[in-house]
Image: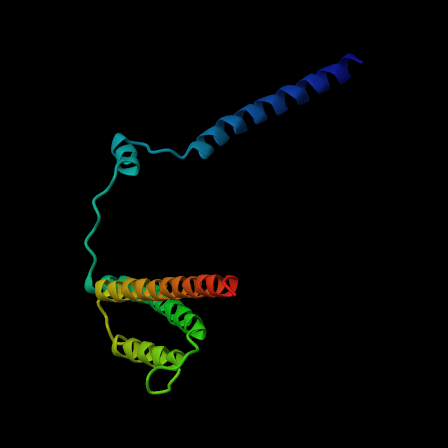
Length: 156
């Protein structure tokens, strides 16, 4: 029995020492922190933005244009959806829906090759405001028409 106890103690102490060494190693491996003060400062301080060469600048510009293309398509679809509500003819007998769609198409075609992101953004903002303004005016006119009909219908 004493020999079995000594075996277990030997096994336990060897496992304990192995485990303790591994824990010590693991702490160092998990840490992987900077070895010097310069590395520590370099990791945690805000670095100056490096200047971009022409190729990287072009890639960033293309990404901006890609997102503005998506916005432009979204705006164009919104214009097409909004024109559904303009179903009365103008003085020539052409539906306002068709006139508005034709004008929107023409303006988008004219701005199609614009490369300057600032100008494209201005055009998108202006287009969005124009659509919202047109819809707001349409809603206001329809409210006035409904109110007029209610007043006229109540007097009979």
